[in-house]
Length: 631
Ligand SMILES: [Zn+2]
Image (tube, rainbow, N blue to C red; front, side, top):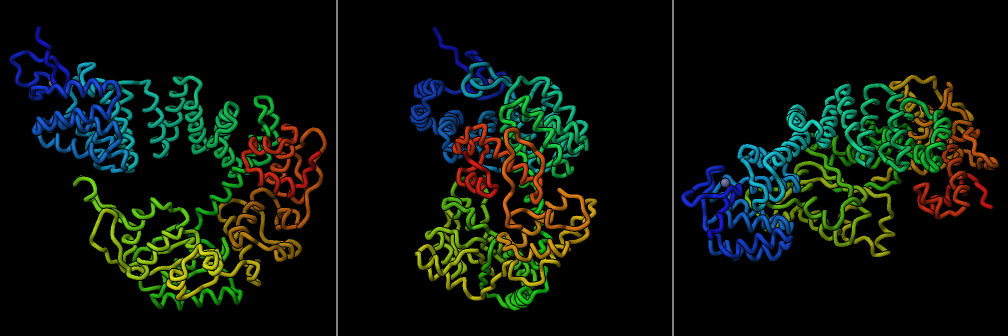
């Protein structure tokens, strides 16, 4: 009996006389024994074995697109992307209508973040799509023509969205939903795209449809959270709050819902609602206190984020004090030269701003300013991040990646937190500083760059040299012009100026009755050390204006660490959310929550810290700060 011969592209059974498949048009080819054995191993998930067998078959059939493709499939499943890419492309050179090769190339490019190549591959797959006999090798194992089309559309939607082509993304999702109205992934993504397009009404409808289809699950909570965000954006605050709370009742640790609810309360000035919330959460969850504690943390982080996003008009350099006049003078002088600058100063004193000011006043002002956060770079990321990589490493399809030093050519590189980098990284950096030359990863040609280098740190580098954590030669390379940004406590007379500036800026954004600061409060603030400097001051002023209603900042609005006294004893028994005088709303919430959780955990601090989502040392600090009594 004859074994039926199947088309190696679509799995259709071929008649004796077929030289080409009548379904997909692929050529008929003899099949090697190793190919059959390889397929069997592949279907068992033994990809190593399959790879060896396919390679042997491909050696015998060097011009068979299918044999080359098989090798690529095995490599793909072994996650050897470089090998898979190579073989897929060789296979496509022989026969260009290999559906599965195009599709998998798309997945590889997707994995590597090559958006254009991935889009091209998925569009090509859609173009070529043909019926797949179920169970036929490879694609037939995973897909039907319908599910494959669906996958391509979903991936394309995601890629278009990433490119900012939202209308095109929408088209893909709508296409999927026409065929599969209950496809949750498409509904979720459609909602997402609609939100980005600010079409909130439609987004809300889409999310609601998805929620109806989904059973109770983590995914459902995520969608419900997204629904809350759509309501918020549309201005339906109460609906938004309701959705976020519903999520939190199911999952008290839902990070996004906590963050979002905190954001809504913060922006709407609804912090007073938390007392009512507590009563509500107590009914649904034994973790009510933890939820509210997380909420108050979230509000603080919203305040901090808001401050970070304003870094464009960072006020750190505002001031008339002699210290600030000196800084402005130094910036001018540094800008006139091309020498390396080292900026030293505490956190929040505006080191990056000084660097930007130097760049903007220099001849390089119209060239790039490239900040690099050194502490964020791991050893392994560093090389390709800083130096880039050559396209030769893989295949012609892959582009060259520019490193940050090259991106900054003719401009300024700002190496922030230089004190945090490892010794081996210091060696590599030293070479660039000395020679203004390096090689890309995978390249042999040296690349020359013309860059101005500015570095900054809050560390004592001389101390680090003594401790052998920082190279002396690198230090002297950096230490050509030194600028020390003064801490706020040393900037005599700048405090009222800065407070006025922050109040004015808040007034421009929201209605507030605040106009200034009382002499008593100013005295307290002048006596405070400001460890977080201008950034901390900004945060304090913003919080006071958000959480209070008054015309002047008064001592009772100030955070208690500034007043140098502790809050009163925790109330006995029931936790009341009444606010203590002399503390901000958030802090009194925090204090009450900690007391509550401690009590509920029978004063087991380890357990309480876990429930509060903070480290044990932080918990000890807070217990001390708030004077919470432990029996
Ligand atoms: Zn076929």
